[in-house]
Length: 256
Ligand code: FES
Image (cartoon, rainbow, N blue to C red):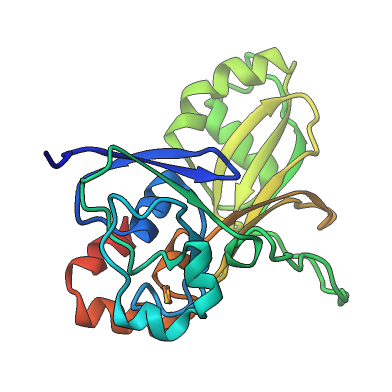
């Protein structure tokens, strides 16, 4: 009897996923968070998604495309193309070995290079202010008092307005205000605070890199990288676009 749920185990990571019959190994890998090279977006054209599947049970027979893209020796060793190997439900468990050349984590990310001097003009900056205390002769509202010190016409966000009286008094009328785009106060802190950070995102076709940047001096504090999840649909944008034109349902998958 055919199984409705097939467990696929990816080696060497040991990651597992359960899929239904008819799913390709490439789709299962994507669901399991396992990255396999797929330059052609899973159309059986590039031959880059080679995997080793030791057992033939539970899979569709070798396709014509696989026969033309795999050598006789590879076929003998159990190589298949992940995008053309479909689980049929005849086996409950399928083990898939991903050889090094088919793995995406082998790639290196270039996050350093020549740097040019640029003048920093962050949209967000902080200023330290000493606000005059109220007195019998000065009964201005807190917001007015703050804006008068700044000497600029600015908006104040609702969140700042709500905490303004408390922060002013907690800081003994010395505060640091965070200003966006020279036009809006978006935060206020008691006392002096010079730290402000921003995040820059480099959205690449294969990698997405996030940089945590110290805004006052432009230093990069941390860098984090993930693989672009769209990579399994093709290495380049044109492949991904043409895939969504040929298979409309892929568009939603790419959005997800
Ligand atoms: S042959 Fe290109 S992804 Fe499988």
